[in-house]
Length: 556
Ligand code: ARG
Image (cartoon, rainbow, N blue to C red; front, side, top):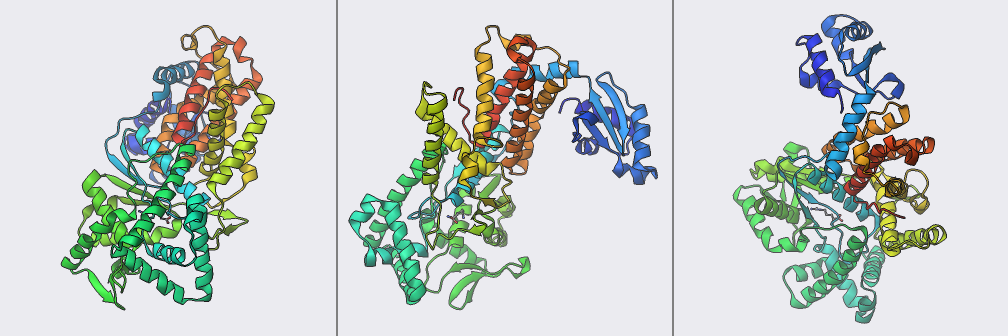
C-alpha cells in the first residue's frame, strides 16, 4: 500500500510507544469513500489509554501529523484520514507496476504446500460439485506459487471403497460390456443409480455390495480387472475436463494407491494401543476431542475412507515433507478431517496441525442439494458445451474473422464457468444458474476478459513505448485506477492467507470497473499520459485472472 509505511512511521513517532509499528500497520485502512481520503487510521482502540473520546484523539493526532507525501490530514468521527500527493504517488506506483510486469506482486516465501483438491470419484460423472474443489484448489495453488511457495497438487481420486463393491454387483447383475464400452461414465452411473433404486426396495442388496467390496479388497483378479477398466475409463473422461478448464496435477494417487499402506497404519495404531473394538469394528476413540470415534476397520475387515486418508497423510509427509497440507473438500466433511487430525495427533505426529481442511459450500439447484444417488446431477461437460455454443453465436455475430477462434471460445467458456464459482466466497452455497453464468454483462469472467482485451487493443494502436510516458496524474478517475493497481500485491497475499480466491475476484471487478469508467471519460489514445495506466491495467488483469485459473486472450 503506497504511503502506508511512511504514515505508520509518523504515527508511531507521535504515539510514543503506545502502539508498536506492527500494531499501527495492522490498523491502517483504506476509507470506503474516496472522498474521505486514501489512507485512514482509526483511533477507537486508543480511547482507553488516553482516557479521552476517539474523536478528540483523532483531532489532536491530525493536527500533529505532517509529511511532504500527504496533502491533506483530517479527522472525522474518530478516524484520521489522509490524502496522498497524487502526482508523486501515481508516478511511483505506475513505475513499479510497469517495471515488474507480470511479476508484480510476486514474492519469494519459503515452504512446501500440498494441496489435495478436485478428487472426484470414479465411475461417476464429474458433476458441478467437484468443480468447486477443482477451481478453488487450483487458484489457491496459483496464489501460493505467486508468493514463492513450492506447491504439490494432489488429486486424491475416489477409486476405492464400498461403492465399488456395489458397482461390481450391479455390473454383474445388470451390466453390459458393449454399453460400458460405448459410453462408460453414463453407463456406470446408470448402474450406480439402479443399485440405489433397487437397494431402497431390497435392503439386502447393501450386503451384496459389501461382500463384493470384500472380494475386491482381497485382490480377486476378475474383480480387480473390472475395477481397473472402470478406473481407466473414468480417468480418460476426467482428463478431458481438466484439459478444457486447464487444470493439472502432480499426482493422481487415488485412494486405492494406499491399499498396501494401510496395514502399517493399523499396526502403528495397535502398537500405540489406540485401537479399540466396537461392535466388531476397530475404532480410535476421540472423546477428548469431543469427536465421534474414527472408524478404522469394518467388522468384515475391510478398510474405510478414513483409514486411507491416514495412510495418505503419512505418505505425503514422508514423500513431500510439506509445511502445510491443504484439503479443499466440501464442508460436509469437516468432522472427517477433524478426526484425521486428531488420530494423527494421538499417534504422536506433531505435524498433525499442519493439516488444514479448506471447506466450501454446496452447489444448489432451486435451493436444494443435488443428490448423486438419485441421478440428479448437473454435468460439467454439458455446461461447458452449452456455454461454448452461446459464446460461438456471439462471436459469429460480432467478430467472425477472429483468428484462433476455437481456442478463444474455449477460454471464454472456461472463464465464465470458473469465475461464476470463484466470485462467491467459498463458504457460501452457490445456486447453480446457467443463465447467470452465460450472461456476459455485469460481474462475470467474460466481462473481465473483455476489459483486458480493451486494454490490449488500445496499446496495440500505440507506436511509442508507453512505459516511457509515465508521469504523475492527478485526476480522480485515473487515481481510482492507480490506487487499485497499488493494492494488487496485498490482495494476492490476503486471498492466499484466507484461502479465498473470491477476494481476488472482487478486486479484479473493482479494477475493471474503475478502468472502464476512465475509458468512458477520456479518449485515452489521444491523451498519451494515460497509456501507462492502461499497461498497468492490462498487466494486473492478466495476472489476476491467471491466479484464478482464467485465461486472458488478447482479442475476442
Ligand atoms: N473423493 C472425495 C469426495 O468426492 C473427496 C476426497 C477428498 N480428499 C481426501 N483426501 N479425502 O467426496
